[in-house]
Amino acid sequence: MILLCGHGKYGETIKNSVEMIAGKQDNIFSIDFTEEMSVTDIIEQYNKRIAFAEDEVSIYCDIPGGSPANAALLTKKNSNGIRVFTGLNLSMMLSLVMGESIENSLIGAKESIKEL
Image (cartoon, rainbow, N blue to C red; front, top):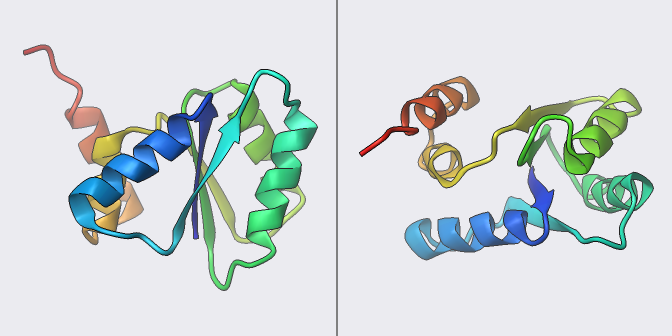
């Protein structure tokens, strides 16, 4: 299971873009983080999704140190089989859904940042 979360509707936007390019993704879910939410609220949303996970869970967040990432780390601390990543971008998610390993997807995401 892949959970995408960022400030505002960032996770939802990335998920929609991935599905526009690669088709419906049944194992990717987005969690919005809105202004009125707290870290506790995000943790509750993570836990609701994780309760249905049949395998490893990866949580991808927009920025390190942000509320979505902090909530993900707290969720990871209290659960087994959860990995947390920051720097969520479209390139990373596309390579994952195309079958790349997490490690190669992270390398590709870093390499996709270029001045043109």
